[in-house]
Length: 184
Image (cartoon, rainbow, N blue to C red; front, side, top):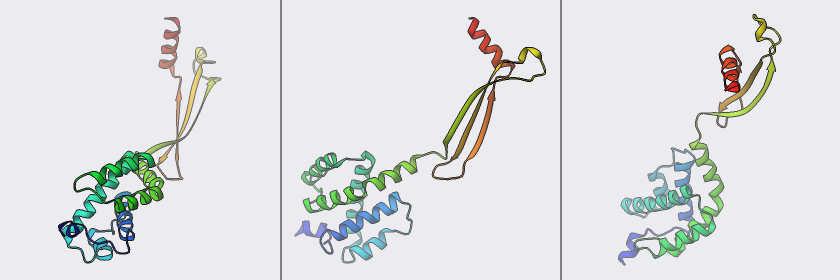
C-alpha cells in the first residue's frame, strides 16, 4: 500500500505521464515559461498531493534530461530504462514504455532545441575569398603584389538577415612578412 501512495495514479493509463513528459519538454527545451508545475499537476494529476507530484516531476525531469543530454538512440534508451526499472525507487515497466514512446516521437525536436540553445550569438553564414593583384598604387614597387580579399557573412543563429564583413590583407607589413618567410 505504501508503494501505491508514492506513485500518483495515472489518468487514462500512460496518457497523463506522456503529457507530463511533454510539459517538462515544453518548459525545459522549448522555452515555454507558462508551463508551470502547478499547471501540470492541476491538469494531469489533480488528486496527487503536491509533494508526490513534485517527486514524480523531478524524477521524470531528471530521466528526460539524462536521455536528452546523451542524445540516446533506441538501443541506449532501452538499456538505460531497463536499468532504471531494476533500480530501487526507479520507474515501473509501464512508465519505461511511455518514456520510450515519448522519446521516439520527440527525440529530433529536443535534439534540435538543445543544439539551438548551445549555439553562440553570431555564426558564419557564408564566406568568399579571392587573391587579386594590385594594379594601382602610390608606390611602383607595390604594383602586382598579391592582396587577399575575404568576404564573410555573419548573422545570428536562426536569423535570415546577415551582415557582410570585408577584409583585405596585403599591406606593406604583410607583404614584407610573406617575402621574409619565402626567403628564409
